[in-house]
Length: 401
Image (cartoon, rainbow, N blue to C red; front, side, top):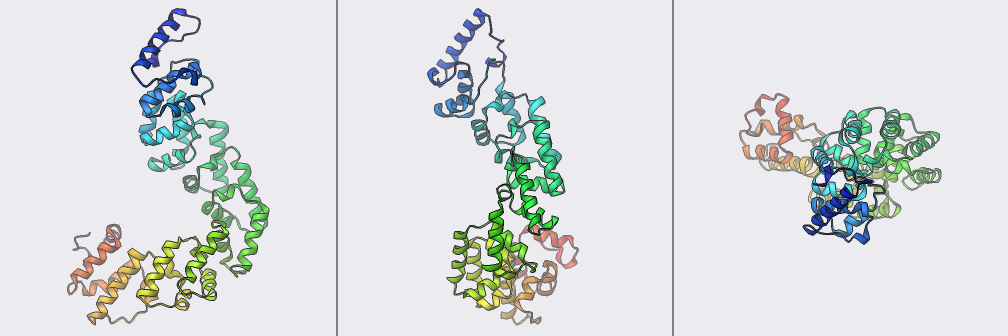
């Protein structure tokens, strides 16, 4: 109702009308104590309460962030409708507006759309676009030419492609922060000085975008020392870089907790560090995921720590969609005395999906249809469709294709 009211300055009649309308509006809605607000922000606060579900206190806090609201010729609904069409839900819009209520004063076509277009130009859309905006909720307050375009172009230069820029921003929207280029340039220089190749610099930033903005010389030197001395990975090893990646994303207390998790399953330190030297990535897996894998491999299959330490790839396999379904197939075939392959567990788990299906499922499909169907359900509909696309003629009749 107020969005189209004319400017009030210098016209007593208009001011009187506005006050009358405001009193009416307040009397028919949840009124905000005028003393808590700058007079010109009263209308904004009422809108936040009645249209976006703000509490009185939230509305007061947000409205007072707006320094200048000299005119009430603002149709806030236009901005809210635009945000909804972009993909933000009511809760996200409220969260965004609570941090940057100034966005409601923006012009959709002139200000908001061009800024989002910068993200769309690097391939972001839908929920990914929303994720970046919500990860950096001051996004719409950034300048278009002197900030957004400049920052995105800098990220292109460092990371090498729009695809990588989009992925990095999805992980950490603060890469668009005012000081991000300066901090990122410092990190790139520091990593290069300690011997990182350009490719490994990009990998490090992609894996640790948050850390990349706060890295300091003392920190990286400490990490290099710990990879060599705590993990026992020499600098000349191709795993050294992966050890740096692993330690960069875990605190010392978290590292000790993960080591204790392995020890609780009876692993001696010798086997633990043998595993880490071969697969530093295991330090980035959650305690729950590693524990579930150990439960299955050790308690159900009887694998020993030395056996698993020499086969670290086992921990990179999806337990529910790869390991368990294949083990069940082997158990069924062995029980029926139909397994003539005599292939070890490491070979079986490492096989490409199509090869496993051709070797262990299709030859017995007619005899053991339930095993065949159950396996397809276990690996998931998408995987079953992918196998169908490969063109195995015997696979096509399945109802899963």
